[in-house]
Each structure stands twice: as C-alpha cells, then as structure tokens.
Length: 133
Length: 108
Image 1 (tube, each protein chain N blue to C red):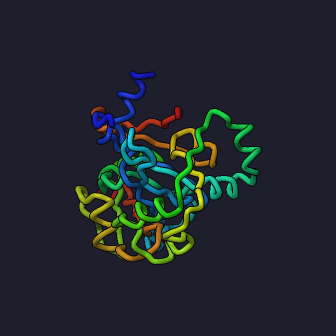
Image 2: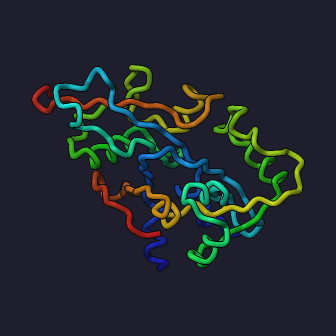
C-alpha cells in the first residue's frame, strides 16, 4: 500500500544471507524512473536452480526487464563501487545482446533465502524484521 | 520521472559485506555470538552505527558491547559504507570483509 511505501523509505534495509550474495547493479532501465537495483536473471536462476520458463511461470508477477549488454556495461562501469576488473569482465562493452534483469526487492531477497532486517531511524533503536516485499 | 522517491535508501547503490566475528574475541563458547548469516547487503549510505544496531538485534546484545572493525581498526560510528568502501576496499571485489567483536557485559 502507499502507507507501507511511505514507511519503507525511512528505513535502512539489511539483507542477511548464509551464502555469498548475488551481484546487484544500480541501473536506470527506463527514462520514466531513476536508477534501481537489479540482479541478473541468469544469476537468480542459477541460485534457485530453475529455468527461465519455470521462473516466469512460478513468479509471473515478478517483472523481468531487458537491457542491452552495452547499456548495462556503460552504466555499471560508472559505479565507484565496481572498480575491480573482475566485476565486469564477463560483460561485452559493445554487445547488442539483451540481458534479463530482476529488480532487487524484498520478495526477491526472500526468494533467494535471505532475511531482511530493517532499521527505523525515527523509532530509535527499534529493529524489526521486514516481512514484506 | 518522479524525483520524489529517488532518495529512497532502497534505490541507493548497495554494498556487499562479509561480517565475521573477530577470531581473537572467540572465547570458550565458539558458537556464542556467531552470525550464521554473515553475508550482508545494505545501502551505501548506511553508517557503521546502523550496522551495529542491526547486529545487536541479530545477536541479542547491547549496542555498547559491539565494535565493528576493519583490519583490527575500530570504525567510527558515523562512517558510511560508501566511505568505508572507497577508503579501504577500492579496486577490490565484493564482499568487503569486516569483523565484529562483542565485549562482555561485565567488562563495561
């Protein structure tokens, strides 16, 4: 709901996992919205041991967006946090191939087996488990 | 586009951390204060104090007991994860490895 949406903006969300986290990329996929965080669908499928078709059937409400590899590379390589050459070496800078992305949301995080903790600054030290997408 | 939501923390670049208990602070009970889910991701604007609070919640300890360390250096509360990454981890692959130590309550 809008109310939940309002609540969520005030909190820092922390994802906790017992497995190494999948890479997350801050990318603007459309001119109608600012940069968001995305996971590569291929990474998600590997982690969930699912096929693309299976994923789209099981989670038809989760939007999969596409972006050219070149555009993805261009944006990802601007990050000050992705400065290790290995981070982007799997991508071809001028490729017109399309990459499938899934937005990094609470629902996807839980799907991957992580837990989310959120810190509400307004309420001081209170920390609550975030159990919504 | 709608700029009114652009400041949301969830749209920030995310930082990937690995949070391990400092080995020298492991006492007799090795499982005590061990973080099972040691891989952590958060906004690059999150500060050390925020991480401390969440850690306290996870480990059920008082926030004065927790210290976050990078290479044995205790990190200041107001340092953001982005500052930390750029000053200590630039050019390296994620996750940024941090340690934490839990002081005994009696030692306060």
